[in-house]
Image 1 (cartoon, rainbow, N blue to C red):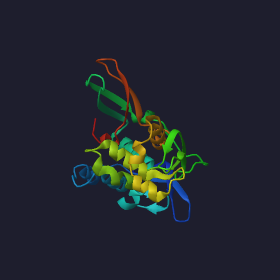
Image 2: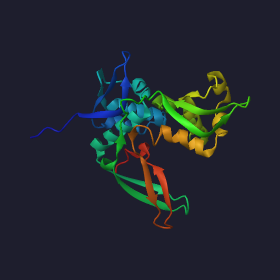
Image 3: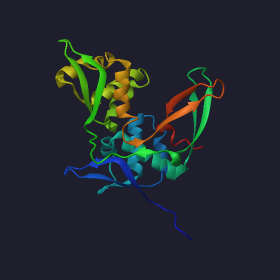
Image 4: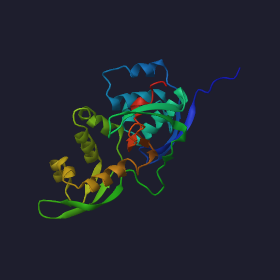
Length: 254
């Protein structure tokens, strides 16, 4: 009798860099077990903490690191964490994922079925730096002295950033999104870091909508990782809209 495959090798979109500066993108994962399923019912775990524990429980090896802890996984880039959750879902429950969305025009339910095997993803290029994503704003930000700042340097978000904003998501999702972006800003023009932190999310609220979208896309659509944005159409009213596949729904059996 053929033995079932126990371990599966994958390549991370970004990878984890060790203390010696070596980036490890190779990982080995296994299927979810009852131990990981129990985590889905643990109300003490927020969404980011749940992801950290699920990944840690199914990640056999990351580079040369055997069985990384949830604390190590929390320090991984969000794109890598989401990619691992996607691959664990595929090997555990298959590629078919059903979903339900609310049409923004008529509030009707839009049911979908997605083949996860068809999703594309982008890996980090050799010349790219996940800690230095450059964005040039169109309108920019004018500070109190009248100086215009258009150049922004971002780093890609990590699990620990998601954990920081998780408590805000339900009561104020816009504030949570802005707080996540703020944590990822390494440089905003020539504004001193202390001044940037004192402004808080107010500096992001002063930006035009177009500039806000440029920053958000640099951290999502244009960043390495699985392409989770979907084009949908409402069968009731015909409206077309976009939504992101929710990784929190990955482990709901179809």
